[in-house]
Picture (cartoon, rainbow, N blue to C red):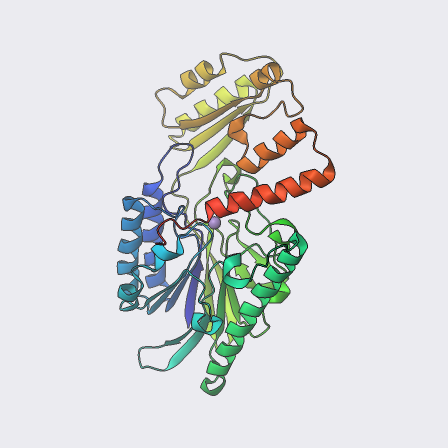
Amino acid sequence: MKVLHTSDWHLGRSLFGRQRYHEFEQFLQWLSQTIRKHDVSLLIVSGDVFDTTTPSNRAQELYYQFLCRASSCCRHIVITGGNHDSPSFLEAPRELLRSLQVHVIAQAPSNPEDAVLLLKDDSGAPEAVVCAVPYLRDRDIRTAEAGEGNEEKQKKLLEGIREYYQRACSHAETLRAPLGDIPLIATGHLFAAGGASVEGDGVRELYIGTLAQVDTTVFPDSIDYLALGHLHSPQQTGGRPHFRYSGAPLANGFSEAGAVKQAVLVSFSGRIPKLQHLEVPVFQELVRITGTVEEIVGRITELNRQGSTAWAEVEYTGDAQMPSLRDLVDEAASGGSVEIRRIKNRGIIDQVLSSVHHRETLDDLDVRQVFSRRLDTWGADEQTRREMTELYLEVLRSIEEADIREQ
Ligand SMILES: [Mn+2]
């Protein structure tokens, strides 16, 4: 049995004001071709299908077109919700999609056993058990109590995650026991301890404080393959090659320019998985150009000469003040095919700003960093800083996770 694992599509996400639907479309085409080419029976998408809880019509169209196409050649599709997805939105067409053998679990069932799917082949014989666990919001797994300290909350949250996986997996084992050597596959959307994210890759913090990362011992040993989502770089976790993040298929920012993107093809013989990392083609090249004016102009000219259609981020790192940088860059780029998406002029920034964070602009910071800078300016002591940050992150998360379609 062959399984294809992908995650974090973030359909609808743009890059510095530029829409990327063309890339999403090409990626989904590639994915359905890959399913056919490798004779995949099960596709798993481990969360963050869409970038926001209110995806555009174009993003939805791409998603449904893909499901229609893929379900004609792939026996089962399992889609779990991520922290960016609206559970109620993803699950709305659930019954209809089930008739296409597309299983959507975006809201964690209150009984973990209900997250377990028994998949059968064309002759009706069981071929895999899947614990389709979506992103676990703390309201799904933890009973908050008034007056509870932060440490207590975090402990309960981690215990909740552990218990959820244990209950789902032990039910899956019970189902599998009389069925022989079929694989037990689990999904997850979380930040596993020891995982790596790249600054600017768009990975949003999940739980708060020390629990931002989940210890991989929460996953039972009975899992033959763990299909994880949330981190955007492909990687294994917990020292186990079969506990894996597929990573996002598209680079989410210029910090990921040139990064290799993957989908994971898992071929099972019995319960033994064999992993193959399939490289996702680059549909829109991103380049980062840094250096002196001569170096920047030289590189743009060179790229244009090669007929490159890359989107470029330019960063001037020379010593001299260069107020005319934008004009010089525009002139070098004019008439060519390279598109300059962003220009960072360190020279100007150094001159204008004199705070401790003088090398930054608002454009470089996310909201969490802005809050941290505000605390710096305020001169908050260590204790206050920690408390304020925890409260701030809690407010932020409740805004980000608000499921406005829920009613
Ligand atoms: Mn994501």
